[in-house]
Length: 113
Length: 120
Image 1 (cartoon, each protein chain N blue to C red):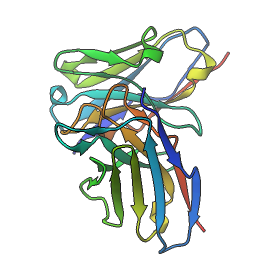
Image 2: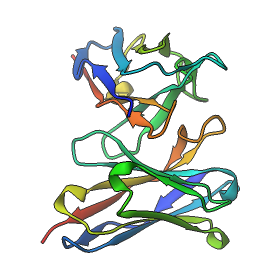
Image 3: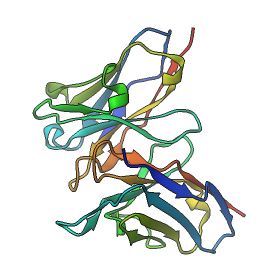
Image 4: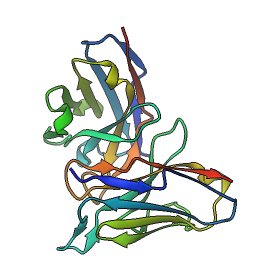
C-alpha cells in the first residue's frame, strides 16, 4: 500500500496568516501517461464528513475559495491556505487515488493562534 | 442536489454483524461508484471498499476482505455495507461516498456517517 505522511500533525496560525500543510507519498503518484498527480485534499470539520477541496494535486473543487491552493508533484505535495479564516479550522487530509487501496494521510489539525 | 443519507447509529455486541445503508438521490445511482470509508474516534480515514452499482462489482481492502460485503438495491438507489464478526476495534463512524467524474477512488459527495459501537 502507498503510505501518505503528513506534516505537521497540527499547527496554529493567526487569522489572515498563511497555513502550509505537507504530504509525502511512499512512492510516486504521478501517472506518466496523463502527467497527472493522483492526489486530493479534504477538509473535515468536527462532526462532519470530509469535504473534497482539491484534486489532481492543484485543481480546486467547485465552490472552494481561492485561498486554498495545492502544489507539488511526484511524491511531495503541499496544501496552502493563503489567509486563514475562522471557518478554516478543521482537520485536513491528503489522499492518493493512484492505486488501490486508496490511502489517506493521518491528518493535520489547523487551529487559530 | 446530490445527497447520500445513511442509516442511524448502531450498537452491537462482539461477534455480531452490522449492515449500514446509504440512500442516494439527486443523480443516477448506477452511474457512479460508491466507496465506504471508516473513521475511529479521533483517528484518520480508512478505505474499506467500493462497488459499481451498475454491475454489482466490488473490491475490498485486504484488511476487510473476509468480513465485509458491499451490495446495492438499484430499485431504491441504496447501497449497503455489511461487516461481520465485529470486535471492539470496529467501533467507528462509517461513511459512504460517491466517486467523482474523474476517478473511481476520488470521492466528491459523502453521507453524514453512521456510528457503529461494538461493546459487550
